[in-house]
Amino acid sequence: MIGSDLIITVALLLAFAAFVTVHVALSGRLAMRQPRWRGLVALVLPPFAPIWGFREGMTKHGWAWVIVLGLYVVARFAGQF
Image: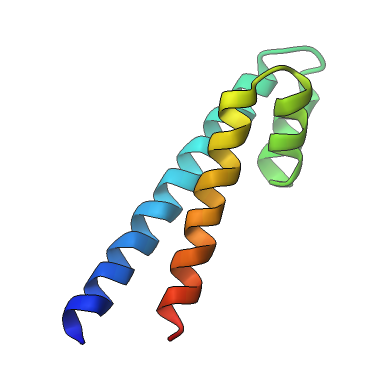
């Protein structure tokens, strides 16, 4: 069981680190466009980041945000069993 616990822990840490990285990158890119206040709001209120990202044409960043969040959620559920 220690092996599977280690795999889940590593997956959880990597997914969370990737999510934070993608979220900050997307919020930063939003802050470079007008209106700039959206970048700050997206940084503090995470669901706005992919929504505004998709509207601004940053589909790759938006999908990366959604996919990495999904991986994090899967890792969280896997850790509970």
